[in-house]
Image: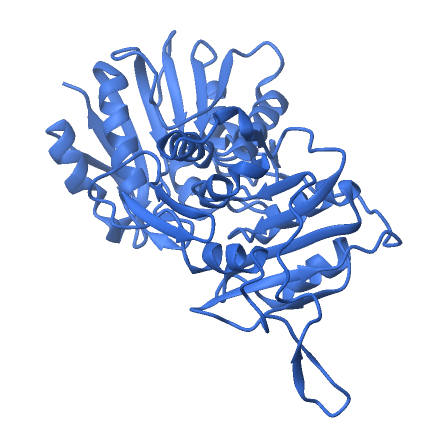
Length: 403
């Protein structure tokens, strides 16, 4: 547990799910910088230039923000911003199931009224009017683009629009996106490697529709899904092409037949699960991901490729949590090894352990991963066995069997 000190008091915050081995905090300097700005405690953060080139503070700096209207917090990674601002009854908009669960847990941990915060996903209809829009800049510029397009109609001339992120997350393209979608935009000085973004809404800007989702046709040589259409909503990994790890797994999928329960774990756009369904029409496939955008993509990809009568379930959640033990025959997995900007095997560990619990005796987990990650060591420890099905200089496909 970590304690964040703010002008509104101290809050205890953790990530979700809680892992004693995880030393990463549930907030960073970017969250702190934005909270200081809202308190009026970031004077000089946004310098402007006089005619002679001398920097001076922006006129609005030093005044606390008016949070009496509708406050929307977008992309709050572990609920830190939402928890601190809970007294203002904010709306949180997130693509992450884990971030939503972390927010619930942190609100409860700090004695906040859970009904004070309205939790929305990126697939939900946003508020009709937003008076304060706070944006934690995501890793995916595409997700930011889609969300700003969706939220721009709710912003008015008096809306305070403030973004935050680490300096490695804010680029010229980020600022241009705010400029095109919201209005004139400036960025702050860097403090502890974090920056702020302030955009002034321009109601006269033309309202263009979001370019998302993207669709493309899969190439030949990738098994049953060759030539099928893939749908990618904003923020889904490798949105404009088939990533090479997934391609390698598709080329080495197990050949199975008969009624069975298959899980596409961390499904992304659903290409792998759709391939499994096409290869075995008697199978029932569960697509699961912690990203709302990913599950929506998977459903669109599956419906287009497998047809309206094919059986499948689509679930946003924390891996295989809540799946009955011993109820699954096959798990297919291409685990991520990043959590936002941090490199970690924590997600893969949880996925592998969840698969072991969900599989029936004799059930199989098939994993594709970068060779250097050494997933075979973890699988051998968990399952007592691990076979290399296929490999190339970059990737391996691994198979572990539930005893």
